[in-house]
Length: 217
Image (cartoon, rainbow, N blue to C red; front, top):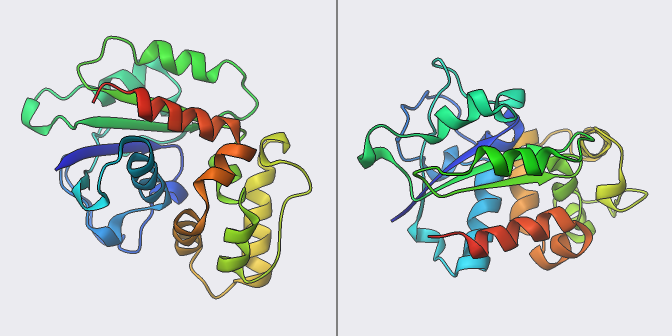
């Protein structure tokens, strides 16, 4: 099995269908526990590394003082590096993924790259511009399939302002798919989206694919 942990800024990226249990770090996640970020990473690994999906095993990541690391905790070298150090080599994954939002900060990728240097685990960081939701709404055909309406943002996703992609997704979901669970909408969007479309309209996503392809695995 190819073992992967995913760190992401918000619960929306990591929330799956099953949220009833608090897993210990290193515990394999079931299919129902996978969030939209896990599902997108799996598709990207299949694309960039020709890894069979059934061989990719997601595991619960390390905690920061007993809590799941989210938000600004993933921006700081002081809090992020300890989350990428496994004292027990048996628990060390093959790959750690760190997904954060740019939120208008142009040097965030460079800061993360500096933080991830000289680790014992292979780690890939990606900064979505301006937020992960920009990737979720980037393919209008996927949006139409999931939300049942032909919707698209008024400009390319990466040219939207801070929080606008989040707001569009929330608005569309409320107006046209209010009976669906928001986390399930996200899961469906990453399963329906065309990765070539995402890479074409979201250069940051194309860069994520490139980094996965060149990672030392």
